[in-house]
Length: 337
Ligand code: ATP
Ligand code: MG
Image 1: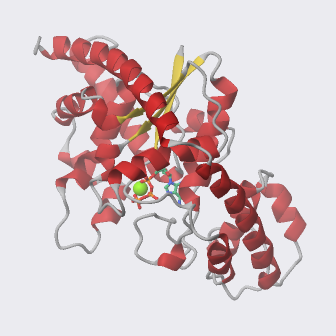
Image 2: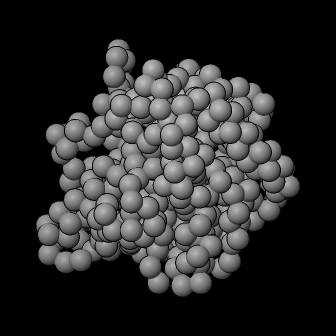
């Protein structure tokens, strides 16, 4: 069985960007493919501590799993939910891969550049985390990894590390994830999803951003979320059209409207073609986001922690079984065993 895998860092509450870019696509794929695919949804708790953790990490971990249920995940025996730090093979494989990755390629990662920009001191985890991400994927031979557009470069790195390792040891130890274009086809989208910051639409919406109005958190009071949309930065062009280059703010609102209502972007763009009043568009998007959040937040409350823990413990048993076998294969190849 092929494996589809994803994870959401739990350094803070997820944003609307995380939800639309990563959670919803994964949930749709999981529900569609779970009969004959392994669906690995893990909590990258070790990745989470590369940034400042807002709130209580343990609570954030449980909340992360509830988010998938609230988004509509219907688990079966092929759906595996687990915490990264409960599966030690991730950290162990990471080290071996580190010794096969170059400083040069890691320093070219856009996420590293963005996260270290203007900081006097940057922790080494921020530099190294793409390699841990490669380990997360390669241990399970996951070919499909639905993530937002910002993570595609790390998927390419994972492919390169896998192929380099296979070449070095002369056999197909790792299954590399499929190429970006095939990831997109599998996700059923033309381009990767990149929800923009509401205050600075040149940049992506990020949960660790300090600018509160730049991001909608999935647990924001729906009224507050609507206000953030109403005050989103736009432009002075005066036309409602999809043009990410010249009108990133307006294009972002059109994109959010499409994804929140699960309608093709093209349809939303046609509906608004010829309109000029940005306030009307904002009002519509604000109301869509508000209704979506109300439903989502009500569902979050329905899932007890005990249920989450049961899923996690079962998932960790599975993940340890699969990952230990792959790690042993790697240790044998390297000569450690
Ligand atoms: P941080 O700023 O702390 O890195 P983040 O918002 O980038 O947080 P991550 O936990 O790093 O969130 O990423 C989780 C998933 O959400 C990944 O699949 C990532 O590609 C996706 N994602 C993150 N931001 C966006 C966004 N603005 N639009 C679409 N997808 C996104
Ligand atoms: Mg990120």
